[in-house]
Image 1: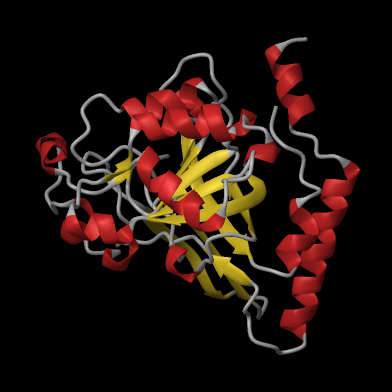
Image 2: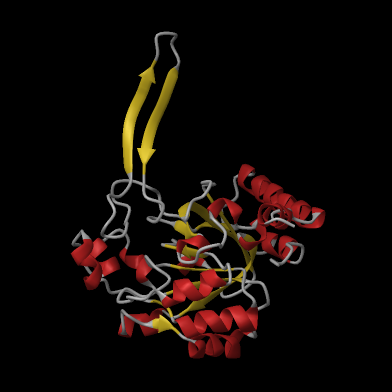
Length: 288
């Protein structure tokens, strides 16, 4: 079977999985339409605008205003243009970002982007050390309290740095721009040994966190990126709202803009909280 054919095959959910997710979202829609508080869904995505944080070497997000206003025929019409780097704001790193012959963003199987999730909070450690890398010990401590991370979960890591958004200096460690600023970056990430442990021992679908990179700021070799992407595990970066999530029992839906051949792209990520999550978690097929 060709690589492209295999990608297409893996991008198809089982009928039961799709049904469960649709039922859950319809139930959520009914809740919102009834006027009840929006308590079952958390937006994990920062809006893209002129304040959006990008890597120091990137321009950032630019919205070019186009037509906007009441047209001659009497109705309102707006249409603008935007330009952006793939990697900035809330976005996905596709495995090809750091590993040749791995999936581009349009080739990532959907069952790596939707599924049951856990939240591992290491914010206390990161408050003490802004360069902290979530370790195997951190995950084992979490498991001692909550039980083993379920196989094929999406693992989200809360460093607490989301509280600094969009203050570039506090969030990145520097507000300077350009190539020379990269050496001055300081923020938490995921230790490469822990990445390899999550892959080998827990067979995770994907991993995400509330900083600008899955490797911590001082990284020069980007070993965590390389370990994850060799195993075709995508990463979600600059996630919002992690402080609103429980440790377990929720579903993540993280759908990127589908750029053919892209190494990443803007991501709209949400978390669906119980009881809707409970209806869909069991039915979403695990990645192969």
